[in-house]
Length: 255
Image (cartoon, rainbow, N blue to C red; front, side, top):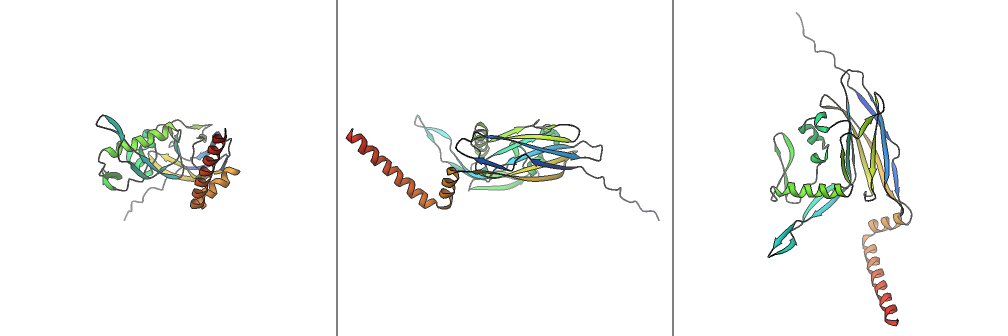
């Protein structure tokens, strides 16, 4: 009796990567920083490999409103609050994402600004359509996409969202590098860098690296005080505002 044995598995490629720094210190003279991610692809097969680097900052709530015309006046509509959107998000790839993987794969892995996963508004819900599990249905209806595009547009204008489909460059056959530009508006907190390796449209490996952005000096002292003792910070801020206003009024009254 003959048996058909399955072919031996083909060894997939692997990737290794590191950041030039894992700590960014923000002080009063901070003007942004450029960080380089470098790595190597180990590929024992003839199949070409693609590298995609995704850097995501801490999530933040986003409140956005639309201008509507009422009786000839332009007013803000009811605000829409996204419960969480990345404060920073950038993607760099060795070639266009659409050539690396299909729509469903990119959506599932949240790779690319168009596939970025936001926590939906409070009245939102998630449904599965066309095999994709994260399409949002809410009472905003089709307006949801307009609000989402507005968030992306605002973040992009501030330099907080970016997508460079030629951002991963190969130094030689296996060594690659990618630049991460942190603007002055980059939020404080822990960032996650993901290095995805693709072959023939399939993710074969992902590596993760951590980057922390933190305040230093007097800025850090004030930041920690505001976040660890918000009530005391609020009362102190109000007291200083009242004291400053009273002192200014006394000085100008005398003059």
